[in-house]
Length: 454
Image (spheres, rainbow, N blue to C red):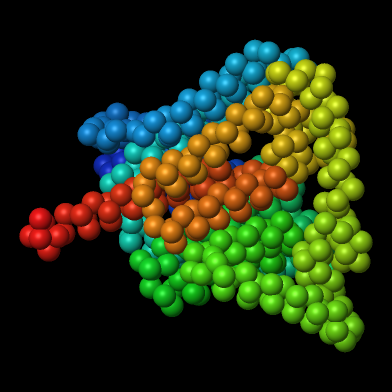
């Protein structure tokens, strides 16, 4: 029954995509929030992952509807995609082949080129002609429903949706299901909502909040406020200090868009007050755990607070050891690394490594493709930021928020790596903002009153 239901949903989205490329693309993007990647389109003996199914229909629609007509792709976006794709391919050729070439090329063409960068490129064209208000309402309501479900899983200490889907499609419950029972300080259980992993869940909500900060004036203020509050609760309950720090960074830049002087004053007062308050709250069974958890985020550089909060998954010492290991491995082949997608290769082959879960984009890129690849990633990442900051004539307020959008995401992936579809969400929502901003600017310039004055 569940398989049939998902087959119908996937097929309907696919058929609608053929009719309307732009709306169809963003339906597939919303589906990434709700439908786990383990779900497959299955009819008889035919079986295809929902990701590949949607991509095939998007390619067909792109060819039929030709949304690229009269659209000039900015050089910064061209360079961003080309540099990342071509350099990744070249570094595979120079790798030390600890990861077999067959595995590297299969991962590159399927996961990196088609499922990621081709999808992102299609997202750029789809964002050109989308009704932004309708999409924003759609992603807000979708996220609200999923966020409420996330709170529900925290209360019952189970994730029946993810576990049952994983059981149906893979024959076993989710390998990350144990997180729902993990205790971190005052947080009794780490939620992942409609996504498999808590880190993926926290990263998604931070991206969404950063995006909604950009559209605060175009969104119903009550709906906007409710979504931000629910997002904060889900970020806290995902049990990741990095997610909390990421939110703080995003919010600092958001507040700075109003008045930097006032921001500095109030944030300094708030930070000191929070430290002062947590230091003097009476220690009871109900408050002790939550206080130590908050302190572990406030003093994230001090591992003693993590130990007090029973947070052992990402201590400062562990990260330091991982960095040393990553550098040692990288030095064996600083140009090409040990091989693309080494992170998942060792998992599949049950090979133990001191890098553990590669909890940083730095560890992953250094080991897999060398130091030059890391430089190119950071360069192209900043290239996109500079493109909109310098080329789009943003107002001072929007510049602060855009910088926050980029800086907070970079901080997140430096500490936890890119989780799930976060890279896709980050870039596609960024493209939406760019094109919506350009439309608003053009509309204001072509306003009848302004034309009459001219």
